[in-house]
Length: 157
Image (cartoon, rainbow, N blue to C red; front, side, top):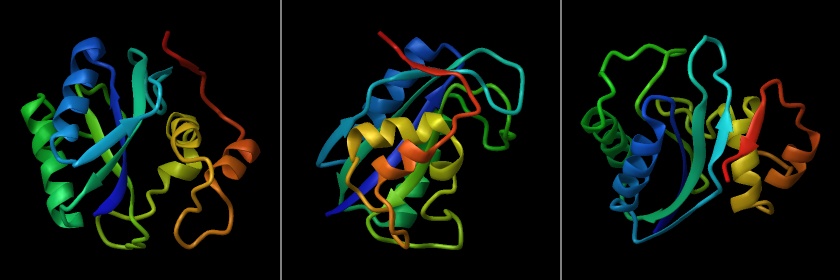
């Protein structure tokens, strides 16, 4: 079994699509848990606020199969194959970490979003504060403590 961390976000009918995405991802896992849901302003474009979370899964799927499965979930939940970055979306699923894998090809792992976005790092700090990112020295908690968010973000009650 591999432990993988997946970022999930939605800003189109987010009360519907975020739970639908979580349920679909959970079917790929033998066990799973997730952070709280956070509301975040969009980065790089004007649009409705996002609901974001991070899901930790235990899975026997290969990295390639997991990536393909997540893309299929996105398609099933209304995200077009040719969806551009920096636009509103029903669902966005990105592999952040896949065990200790470091991968420079697609998907790039660890995903650079871990170092750039509060909507990824804050939920990760809740799920696995003592985890050291493959190829790094610091824990997730240490990275979060040093992070300066450029985006408004708050937990959803």
